Amino acid sequence: VALCGVGLGTALLPTYVQSWIGLGGWRGGYLGVAGLLIVIGAPVVWFTVREQVQSGVTATAERGDFRQVLSQGRFWRMLASFFLLGLGISGVTPMLPAILEGRGADIDVAVRIQAVLGLSSIVGRLAGGWLMDKIFAPWVTVVAASSAAVGLVLLLNAGEWGLVAAMAGIGLG
Image: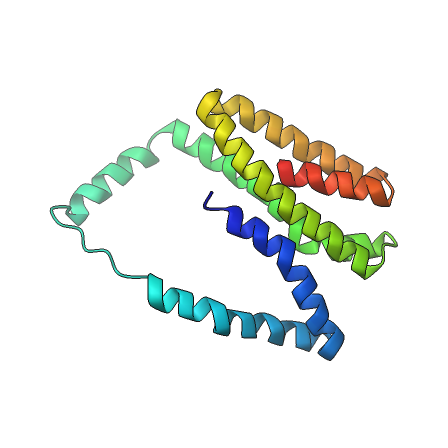
């Protein structure tokens, strides 16, 4: 649920930025994002983020627990798998409109496909979390990663509608 905001941003931000690019080129796009951060982001942080005071927990105890975790092979395997999955999916997302435009798609189509990616990632994250509560989590992860791999293969080999399907696959992955 926590990462659904990323999917929402992926769905809505490209259209917003594209309209600013239309007004002022790439500089206009950057100004639009900066304005969004100032108007929405800054007030949200100002009114919601508070420093947490922990009672009865010492820094020494926290460091000791952290050192114990760092010594376990399971931690490093999980870290590597999360990093590689995130790199594979997040590495494509920001570059998607440029990739699609390079393949001959109109920029408006590329932005709409980016929106499909964002919306499908919300569905994928919610469904994946629900499934992980019901089914052994590594199996769910294998299916999700396979879906992302199929989506990337479709991205390389399919036409425009195939690109939409590819983006849905990546988002569900």
